[in-house]
Length: 178
Image (tube, rainbow, N blue to C red):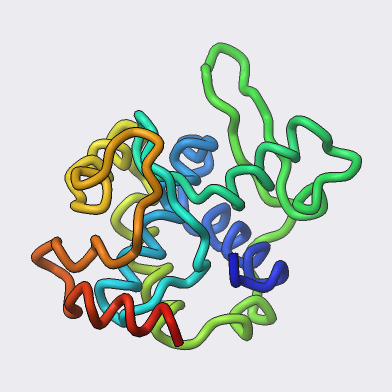
């Protein structure tokens, strides 16, 4: 993963500030990361986090980010993200709810260029108030998920197969190599 930790934490704060956290569980969080990365690839040729994605039953997941979030539950004393998010299990709901200790701030904006902020805004506007099933179903309609099998690594270049992509597979691969 090629994203600075401070920028990753800012993305988590963004998601917790600009989505309805009643619906923000770990599965939805992983799909929000998928959509910011792959939408950014489609529009600008490169991802925001550069994490490696894997095809799982509920859709694509960013491997390093998922492990870092899981550590908040598994080993909160040593988890790198424990100062940024908490994971709660609301009564009567089968979900691990993601909450941020702070809202996204003006200082956080400094970690992003205008295009990245627009991508974050677009994804949160599309899915911010939606439930997990909606975003999972949307990820299952994307070529990066349909063109891979369970447990396959998902290359960013598969975004080129979707109609809304502005780049070819070759262009995305070349931009990834820079």
